[in-house]
Length: 153
Image 1 (tube, rainbow, N blue to C red):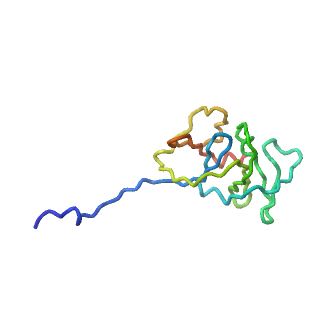
Image 2 (spheres, rainbow, N blue to C red):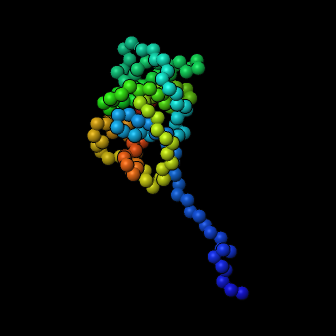
Image 3 (cartoon, rainbow, N blue to C red):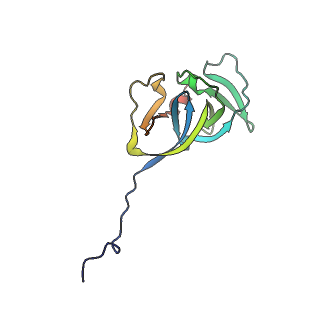
């Protein structure tokens, strides 16, 4: 009897825990929300303005009979936008989902939990009150938004 050969040894594969994020663009920032917070993504939907609404509320939309508040995400998080928002990211709570207006949809990213960090105190051009975490990608910073704070009026 000899030692087991490498082919016969069981290999244990340790996989790092990851989280999935839906990404989207506003200005030059790449933002993300946890995939479990996103209900669906749509191209531009007709928005009906609401008089005397806060400046970041673009209006309301009718999504298959359900009325949703449409939030101009750039205004909500204090970002100066250069292009029009053409996509609706529907997030949220079953009783009151929101439509977040964004410029462009990115990819679904799988980020290792070990690469998700606390946000810096300042991100130039952005209100960090709405930022939950960040992750350093090879070419840019991924800004992970806090869905709970987006819902607070």
